[in-house]
Image 1 (cartoon, rainbow, N blue to C red):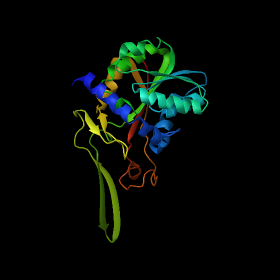
Image 2 (cartoon, rainbow, N blue to C red):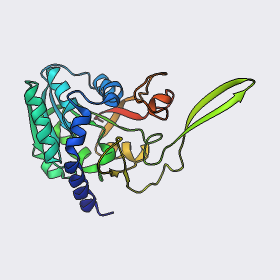
Image 3 (cartoon, rainbow, N blue to C red):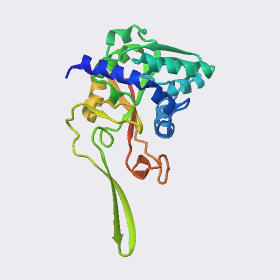
Length: 266
């Protein structure tokens, strides 16, 4: 796998569709972000006003602005200069102060220049599955965090919402009662190559997704000297109408589409 080539193409794709994602997320994020991602990240983060936070792969800055509004001193980075510019505009319009920088999280040296033991916390929201190699990020994070710091991440759930879920809708007559059941079929888990996925409906260009089973995802963090001390698997509530289509995640209240975790120095 040519990491540099994949990463460079990924950057180009995200720059091309930055405006689409900025409009989709708006100031506070889409429904998926507001109902699942942000609440789980904030719960694990347990932010205290005045803390210094690095928001990794910040996108249009929806989580970044929330952290700043809660009193954090935030530095936010993304490898897409178009995303950074859009995030900066929205943050300025909101009257918030955030340091935005263009940084590639596959470049460990560039990350280390942000400052050793500078941050109380690092967040990485719904981005690990978009990054071709995550080991440099975890290694750098171990140096960027203070001794009692924490790294809070959210990502597509590797077991249920990675590169190959198939949504199923079945209807059955059970003794005169019509029963509808929703389920997910998974055909692969341990070994899947990078694939381009459609992402959000109407997205102009698909982008790469990188599947990692839990052992690989968390193993990369453990190898960098982290221990996992918090884990959440949020799902939509029964009857949550987050999307008009029946085969959306709101139809699966027993299956978590994302995984959020908190890492600390071991």
